[in-house]
Amino acid sequence: MNKSALYKLSYGLYVITSRKEGRFNGQIANTVFQVTSDPPTLAVSINKSNYTFECISSCRQFVVSILAETAPMPMIGTFGFKCGRNFDKLDGIAVRTGITGLPIVIDHCAAFIEAEVTHEFDCGTHTIFLGRILDAGILDPAAEPMTYAYYHKVKGGKAPKSAPTYQAPAPQPPGPAAQAPRYVCSVCGYVYDPALGDPEGKINPGTSFAELPADWVCPVCGAGKDRFTPEG
Ligand code: FE
Image (cartoon, rainbow, N blue to C red):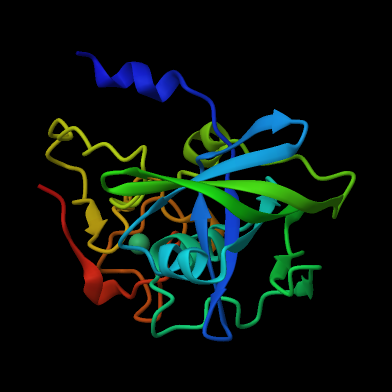
């Protein structure tokens, strides 16, 4: 079986918000799709180990905020790679309250959909929640929704191990001996390549990992330099 065929499936990138015991949480999901138009219904696949799973299981409602291409990597990293059990991922994020009482993310989002759970399907590591759509709206008519392909190709994004579409990375072939070593983020899998630098972090190409400032953080998940290890 050639699992790379699965990479040819198309997805978007979404912030899923929900609530447990009066506390809000959000996470990134790429597996959101409309199931029926009458009644308007959509589905989302959530890892059972994620805090958002507990939230949706508890409050039976969720909001899908559709990320735009302008969404910066640290924002995606916060929602996608940090755990909301002990961390308020919505702190500093612009939201408005939907009719469910849940937060709709309005920063760098094109549109939103609010839903209440009607069915759920146990899929082993994940649960698919089916939701009847209660409300939906456009947040930014000019915003282009971010596709999962855009996230990977243009933004250099990675999938966390908890994502339904995660695949272990293939080992990198050794580069020329003269190249400075690449470093891998132990939290999200982002690879710092000195040949590329970190354009979003204003780090020029040719900057070795050792030369990065002490306060430099992973552009995907926000982890510090101490969470990086040499590749290989
Ligand atoms: Fe990272």
